[in-house]
Length: 106
Image (cartoon, rainbow, N blue to C red; front, side, top):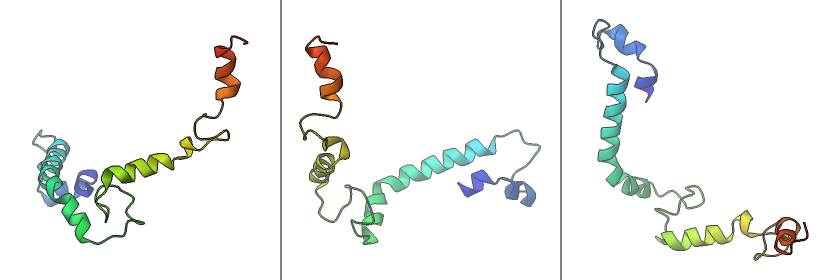
């Protein structure tokens, strides 16, 4: 990506030809995509090999326990959207905004 962001070095070194009408930025981006496709199947193993603790790497995928779905469920339960003033079953604003509509007292 650094090479794509600063193509001047390639032109100055003569690696890219100014007279040639090829869009080098697109060629670099396509090359990055191809490299990512080759790396992607091995990326999880690479990240896991670094032994980064679960507290630092905030991802359910590749955590030390291997419980992807359980971790996502716990994160959803602990979400601030699921903790309201009136309890976990009633979202904030429901009694003020929705109940009058349901009772037709608007």
